[in-house]
Image (cartoon, rainbow, N blue to C red; front, side, top):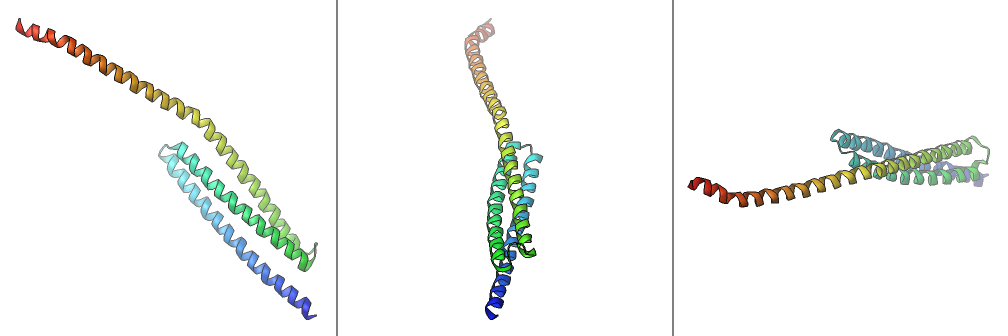
Length: 165
């Protein structure tokens, strides 16, 4: 009997550690989401959509890493609960449910990252066109400036001739 109690005690202690680890990951995820919202809002307020998208890409990638870590912990907790309490125990089923919810959240995060990547790709051609237009404008302005200098040097002699008259 003592062996059974020890096994259950170890499982309960392990469960406490898993809950603490999951809670820590959840807190990190909340912090990252808040930071991502603040950063995105700041960039959008300043009209820097491309920088907002880059920040969102980075934030989502970090959240995906944490979510995968969470799933691994939940998978381990499910396995330990199955060993300690059996496949159909409430504790095991609760861990499984949490794991499936985390997997669902991972799919949502990955889809959101995919959407942000697509949006970034769509915006890149626009930025490239703007950059090309700016370069063309600068080239035309330099050419106009050169022409003005040429005309100025050509007609500066006429100015001197007119003064002499």
